[in-house]
Structure formats: C-alpha cells, structure tokens
Image (cartoon, rainbow, N blue to C red):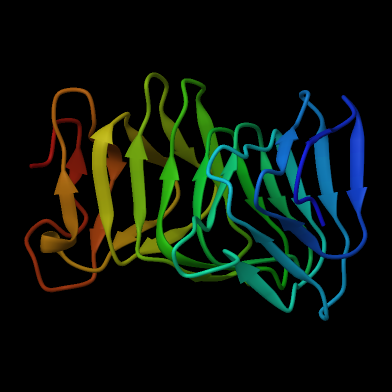
Length: 212
C-alpha cells in the first residue's frame, strides 16, 4: 500500500507479487521500467491517482478485483509503453489508455468499463489471442501522431476515430453496425478492409478515405 510519498521504480523489472493499492498522496514514477504483476486471484489492483502512469506492463494473473478505491476516484490504467496480458492475465473493470503495443495471450481477459484509448505518438500494434475474452465499450483512436495496426482478428461494438488511422491489414476487422463508427476525418480513418455485422452495403468495403 502506498498512501504517501513517491515510489520510484527501477529502470528494469519491478515484480508485484501481491495487491497494488495506491491512494491519497501516494505517487509512482515508472523510470522507464517494466511492472510485472504476478499476484493471485485473492489480490486487488486499485488506485485513485489520475497522474499515475506506467511504462511497460505485463499482467500474469487474474486479480480478484480491479478499479478505483471509491466511486468518486479515477480507475484509469495508463500505460505509456507496451501492455502484455500473458496466459490467464486479466485486466478488468477499469478504463485503459495505452500508447504502445497491446498483446494478449491464451485464456486472458480484457474487460473494460469504457473505451480502450489508443494514444501517444508512436505507431501501435494490437495483437489479440483468439481465446481472449474481450469486452469493452469500444476502441477510441486519439493519437498526437502515428497509427494503429492490427496483427489479429478484432471485433468491436464501437469504434471512435479522433486522430490516427486504423490499419487492419489482412486481418478481419468487424464493427457491430454502421452507426457504431463515430468520427473520422482527414487525419483519422480506416485504411483497409472493414466488415459490418448489421445488414449494410458497407460490408466488405475498402476504405482509404475518412468515414464520418
């Protein structure tokens, strides 16, 4: 538990083998290092400091509970580097902002309260294992520079385009319906093949122009 002062992480690996609780005046500085979560199903991950940002994060466990310490506090997990959910890794009941690659392993789960937000200035790759349980309000692309590419099949209920392109490549990218794509402009569009599950003439169309 961190309730005051600043925890300065090493520039290498920081293993957290139990619960993570950071609140009050507590602060965390990642120092460009890696946080590796290896707790058990009886542990919790909670913090209420919106200024907390991680560099690279690897999750190797299914925590009993994720979220903020109170309903009035933040429950955002902000990862400036890469986020990797290994086999059976779990991230749930929080909001996610990620600026690097997102990779999931077999049996992992990604269950979010709100959009997963792809941010930052680097090009990003999303690679989801076919057995990953994905449940989210949707994906928002809102980058200062760079684009997002898919290295796997992905199905979303909602896609929000603010800035930055989404490139599915040869992978199947599906959105629940034409009304579930929000935004799109000269700096944010789908560059590739899009499938719509609802009946629509858009299904299977190729987009090299803004949708909006």
